[in-house]
Each structure stands twice: as C-alpha cells, then as structure tokens.
Length: 216
Image (cartoon, rainbow, N blue to C red; front, top):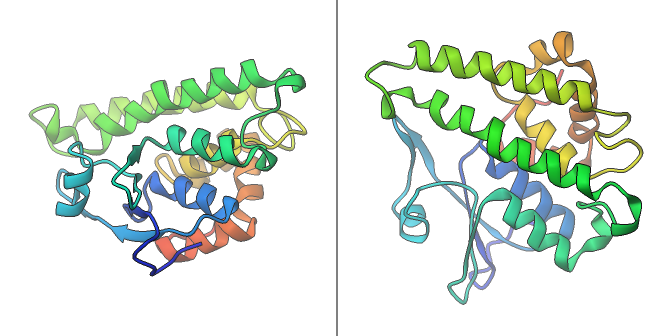
C-alpha cells in the first residue's frame, strides 16, 4: 500500500527492476510504504538518497523510520513471512516442500541474478560495450539456467498446488532478457506461472506504477 505519510518506511526502487518483487510482497502484506524512485544511469541506479542508505546502490532498499535498513529481495520476503505466514510466501514446515523452496530460492539468487549483474552493465566489468561478448555469454548462460528451472517447474505453481514466493520471482525474471516471447516458446511452464502472477490485483498495481507492460 503506497503511502505519502512521512512516518512510513521508504522503499527505494528502480522502475522495472528487481524492486518490483518487494513492492508486490509489501502490497500483499498490506504494509504502508513510500516509494522513492532511483533513476537508471549508464552504470546502474543513480540516487543520492539510495546510496546514503545502501552504499552498493542496489534496489530494493527498505528504510524504516528508526533508521533500520533492509536490503536484498529475499531478506524482505522472509521478513514479511515472519509476520505474515498466512500469505504462504514460504511453504509450511509440514508440507514437505521447504527443502525444494530453499533450493530454488538460492538457485535464483545465487545463479540467475548474477547473470544480470554482469550482463546488464558489462562496461563495469570488462573493456567492452553493452553489445560485447560478456552480455552475449551471460544471456546465453541465463537461458540455460531458465531452461533448467523450466524442467523443475510443476503446475499450476512452481511447487505444484502450493503458491510461494518462487512464483513471484519467476514473474519478475520473465520481464527481462530473453523477454516473454522467448519464454512462451521455450519455457511455457514458467510463462504460465508468470501469467497467473501477472493477473493478481496487487501485481497489476505494481505493473501500473512501474510503467511495464502486462504479459501478452
């Protein structure tokens, strides 16, 4: 629930970026927060306020009125889960699904995310522009990773009948390279999961605020 109240926490975001997932989760939990948009520059996000709270200049960065700073999407998700287990962002302990949830949560954050870290701004890591081999190779590697995730996906959600935060991650990843059309053809199970998330009311609000297109 986006707010203008100065006593509510501030969520630093980059429109269309990974912070969309934090916006969805906070919205699902009914948490009131203020949005502070950081602009995209040649080398990433540019915002004095963001860098003051998070020197790495990454989003999402959630800043509470008492000065507490929470970064990393997974950390925000797990914090929300602690206070709102009814949202089922994490499978219940007796479901038998938690090991799979932890496995694929780590896979997404440790294997897939870095391909964007290095591929989105290759000029930060190598003497080449955005069309150089580093981007090409990280994009190719990401396709292999996403096809591996496709092989593991169940229906109607990634873990089967049980919704979890993994489904939100899948929705977010499909917004980015190699883009939704590729997923429709090569990873239809992931695309179907993302489309279900796309149709959630809270997701539609985040789509509108970020100025991104609904999935076709």
